[in-house]
Image (cartoon, rainbow, N blue to C red; front, side, top):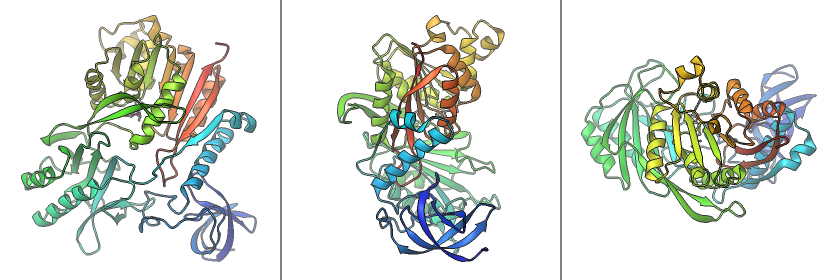
Length: 486
Ligand code: SAH
C-alpha cells in the first residue's frame, strides 16, 4: 500500500471533524466529504503507522444519509463540512460526537452518559440562519477583487458573495464594497506580501430588529473616497452602523484594536425571546441587546433563544439566587437570568463587550446585574481571595464584598472553544455553588472540564446538545452540574 493508490472503502464511522472513516488493509482511512454508509473509491494521500488520509474520487454506492449539497461551493469551501448529509443524520452525528467525547475524554461510563443525555435540539430551517458573516477580501487569478470564504485549512479564498448559511443582505453589502474597490482602485490586502488595503468585511444582521451593521477591516485608518462607500452602504435597507476597524498586524485575528464609526450608530440592537423549554414556542419575555462590532453575539438567534431558555431551566431560579455568569459577552445570559434571580454578576475580558453589557442592563431596566472586566480565571479568584493583596490588586477600587458573591447559588460558564482555564475551574469548585450550568461550543474541552468538576465534588445531571451550526461539524452543548449531597 502506498501514496496515490486507489482503494475501495465502506464508510463505517465519522471523525469529530466530519471526515468519513473506512478500513482497508487493517488501517483506518479518513476521507473528507465521505458520508457514513457510503461505499467509495479514494486515493491515498498520506500514510501513517495505523491510519491514513485519502481523497474521495468516486461514490460507488451512496449512503441513504447522503443528499445533494445545496451550495455549489460546499466541497471547496471550508465553512460547511456536512452539507452532503441529510440534516437528520447531521443531528445524529452531533449527538454521537458529544456522547463519545464525554465517554472518551471525560471518562464517563456509557450507561451513565446515555442516562444524562437528552435528545439534541435541532433547527427547523438549517440554512440562512447566521446573523453574522466575516468575508475575507482577496484578489483572484485575473487580478479582480473578490470576497468569499477560505477553503478548508488554507487561506485560499473561494469567491462567493452569497453564502446560503447567511442572510440575503450580505450580498448587497459585498457588492457595494467590491464595486467601490474596483471603481476607486482600492486593493485587497495580501497576506503574503502584507500589501494592499481591505482585509475583511464583517456584517451583522438583527433577525428581530432588521438592523444591519457593517465593519470594514482595513490596514489603514482611512479609506479612499470613504464618503462614496458610506453613501452606497447607507442606501441598503436597515443599515444602522458603518465602522472602519484598523488591523495592521500580520495575524489571523480578524479585528484590530482601533475602530472608528464612519456612519450611524456604534452598533446594532437585536432582541431575544424566552421560549418554553418543553416545546420551544416563544412565551413573550423579550430582552433587547446592543451589539458592537468587537463584541461576541451568538450567531444563530433562533437556536440561541432555545439555548438560553434551557440555561434558565437548568439554573432552576426562584428569585432568591445569586448567580455568576462567567464569559458573559454583552451580558446576554446574565440579563436573560436577572429577572428570575436576586443578583447576577458577569465577567468578560473584552472591554467593549462589558460596556455593551452595562448599557444592555439599562436598556432592559435591569438593576440587579453587575459586570466586571477581566479574565474569569483572574476575577473570580480575586473575589474569592478578597481582602488579600492579590485580590485587591485585580478588582476595581471600592468593589464591595458580599458573602453571597463568594458563595453563589448558581454559576453559569460559557467559555470559548478552549474551555475554562484550570484556575477558573478550581475557583468554581471552591465557591461551592449548588448548581453549575456549563454552556460549551466544543464538547472535547467540555468533557475535560466536566471531569475536573466531578473530581471536585460535583455530578453531571443533564446534558443537551443544541445545534447552532447546521451544515458544520460544530455543536453547542449545555450541561447541568450539581454539587453532591446538596
Ligand atoms: N455568554 C455570552 C458569550 C459567550 S462567548 C453569549 O452567550 O453571548 C465567550 C466569551 O468569553 C466572549 O465574549 C469572549 O470575549 C469571552 N472570553 C474569552 N476568554 C475569556 C476569559 N479568559 N475570561 C473572561 N471572558 C473571556
